[in-house]
Image (cartoon, rainbow, N blue to C red; front, side, top):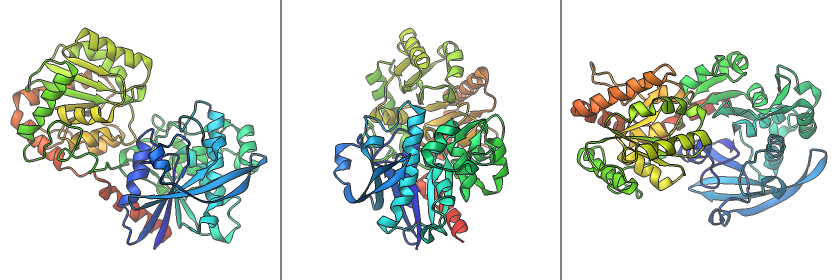
Length: 481
């Protein structure tokens, strides 16, 4: 039995702020339990919901030297959906109303503590993993510590580490002197070939340098991050590690996102009856949001964090033009003020065509996936993206820019061969996007049979976690040898 430990700063069902939590919560459930014992270790935040805290029980505690003092470390555990979770408890670091805060130096101290505590706790819980699978910069110090102070201990000698990059933009950077003082790492580690990058200490860089393998969340993103445009200053290092770098696309949980059983949607449907039943969700959503009712009105959904990364400057540039077309646009999300206000403005200007829902609602997101005909995702960069996978599952055709996971998961429509599961454009250009949306409108209104055949193919595509899990298993086998 090969033992794997996932280390991450968040994971469903305990704590979630983004897609990382979905990966950490879903992937371990799908790894083959016959061959792998996969467990997860997370911080025990005080903001974990009460009903989940109830499931967690105390194992033991100890004191650890950290940041020039002796610090309390509690170890707790829970089992949910057949997965064993461990928690590192320390109220000084993991208290507060949210998992993360806006002070980057404090965040670095907090996750340096977590990284060291994870390794220190292992001998006490009697779990000796073959591989520690680290996720994002918050766990970037685990591969470093593993090769530094834990290296001499027999318990850790053959332990390997994997670093998974979910979004290269976030790296955990602060000045060298402070980070060196917090982590207790010697000068030797703060050089340009290790943790130092552009005069700062960089935790993600440390993880990439010292991990035995590096992965990211789609094949195209794995290639993109070796280039200057997408590399966020680490492209040289990623090119140097390209033999150990692979992209494995994320999946989605096919039980949570399933139009045949979805409790949030008005009318459940499947690949056989969607032609009749899917449209009932559109009529109900038009009613709910005060849009002009009509089953033949093309509805475009957009569910997103409202930030630059998501290509919303392109949308803002052509929104007036787009609203001259016979389409309805439904937006859900929160983020930067300028994008929130931009969508509010167009909602006010085109009340019966645009609905801006500046909030987050799980129920409304499911209803938009089920009701929309197309789903817009014109990202500047997108490591994997989950929304396009959810829209495919609901037979809602994605309109995407060819970047990262969007390029890997959406096959562009080819009218001559009658293939494809969505529409895509290449350049980061507002009118190229508009032209692609209008091409999709043309197929929707003038070639409905072709559109429906595309929906068939979209709903038949398999982006469940089972497919990705097999690829992770191959990598674990390769690394353990």
